[in-house]
Length: 463
Image (cartoon, rainbow, N blue to C red; front, side, top):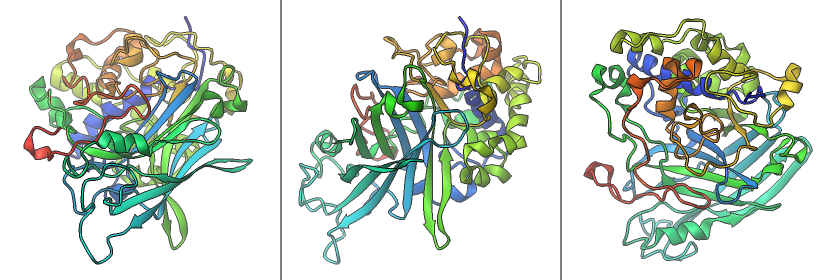
């Protein structure tokens, strides 16, 4: 079968991302640590506005909907009180949708926040007794949010006064955190559901990839570096037609997804963070372009020569050849250019499928090469998901969107080592980093992310 869409620029970006992740880490060991966790100099000093990961997938239990997730504020230590974790009230958090391939947002879902702080000068506590409900008076600090849908035709308020799920401060303070989470989920005008609050960090990997590619001999693998840490999650589930071109997901099933943060300054709101595919800004771009990338829209990407150069002549395959003796594929890597920047318009290695996504091939003149997470909503959820996604024949997996269970680091390394070019997995990398799943099980219903823990990471037994 043949993949017929330019909007499914699927594996290449992931490949380019993780591959260059390794290379830049070797050259500049002080830069970044995880999937866009502290990925650029300026945003590293502003963690509340730092995108860590974006996910987009057809909802497995409601297949007429799509779920969009964006995480922020990396490395939340569960016991980080007495002032726990919040969204920035001086910022606008966005999830943006491109439905026609021009790399500009056709739909923006925007969250803004306000504080309800009842502590005053009487106590330092976050809560002064057990919190058994989301509106319990024992909860002394709480945030609320407004969610709006912005299009060229106007602004619609989807949620007013939504309640942010609090930080999980411990078993004595919050004996049933799952109850608090459930109570914080709210309906969305026009159909769907919304959630904002703390969750377990869904990204899983062994970050010792930065130590000469797992120690130079694959001896440094098997430890989930992000185990026990939390993040702030924005989650939205909406009907597929709500995000499709002309409101018709059957005819126009491919969308591009990315997240941004606009922060207030005396000069007005300025975009300070951007994330689509994992690892891109962190490891594809050189340090001198990272802050600039965070400030621009995807339609500017084609004017960044470093992106094209990193894809056509990636460094990681050469490092794999030098360190592990794995022969690097020949350059220029046109397979990655097609997948990463222009989309796949013909059979390309393992990416072979008729996915009913002809719209951007038909309108190729309008297609603008760009970086974002692309999702084909016509692909139904897989009964038995494979963590290696498209490379393993699971067409609903990364990089066709991104599910919580997708092992993006192993996928990326495989693709860069040649799997995206040959259609065969590289046996020498079959074990990957030996972190194949999150330490906590994901949920079976919205918002799907795992509940945040309440034990210190340094105990070695974070719950």
